[in-house]
Length: 361
Image (cartoon, rainbow, N blue to C red; front, side, top):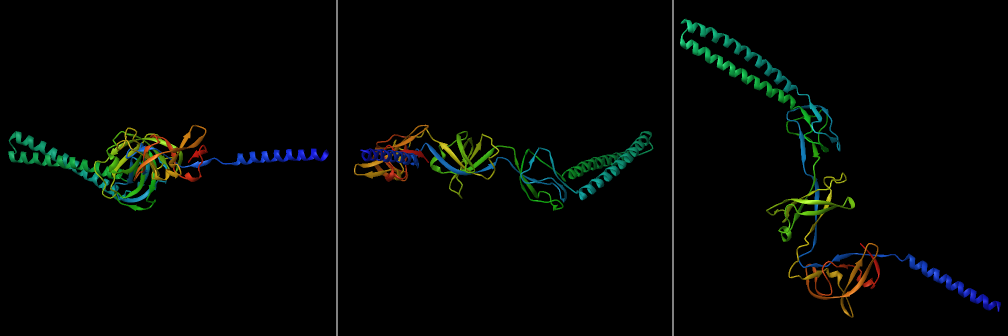
């Protein structure tokens, strides 16, 4: 009797252990990730993605307007600057010498003008008394006019030379960030030589090229979304601001510019970007549906796909029989079994099971 009870207890324990072990194994089964695509019209994909590069809308090359040796240089990579902030100074030796020379010329011409004016007044009095001829009076007037013109010219020269001194000072033209520094203190630079690059505090643009097949569906003011490889799990709103009317012969695409309307300091010039265009109103060619070729499987019952039914928490795959048509560059034409916008698995069809839980990849 005791042996029988012991055997029953052992059997119950073994079954209980096996049940727990089975439960443990089931809990450890991971939810399989699957790649997917959406059923779309032939030639009428609702979403198209294109790659581009981010850049600041306004990029300013910084340079002095005169030549000289840099004596002060407050320019560092990544430095934030404010408009009219002093960034650099030249020694300005030649400009200062020219300015001093122009002042001396102005003083000399002013003295000459005053002398000719006194002489004109004297000749006028003599002419009125009949002691000077008309030709003497006219000559005096012409000398005075010439002296006045010389004086006005010397004043303009002084102003110009003063501006040339100011050309030896480099100020920030806009608020922004220093993106590049190409000079050092004590370096001799010439007028117009780039010493740095300023990315002004303006919008970020994405430059990309679009094929002729969709360029007529894109217009200025069209809303798009942008994602960046360097900024994960985030999309930014943007708007099409430029659409080129002619093709770029080097790339055989039409240049398009997209401006991001959402500001984020994480977005930096030079980042690789993906731009998503929505063409929801495009029905495509004769309303023919297509799916990727690798989304269609075949068994003894015929052709099939796995439809993905998902909500906020879970997703399952459901086997769906389909009828296919011709094979196109976009995949198989679907004549029955699917509707536009449905999600279907595009990989691992041989190992998926009807009703299996999955997660979208």
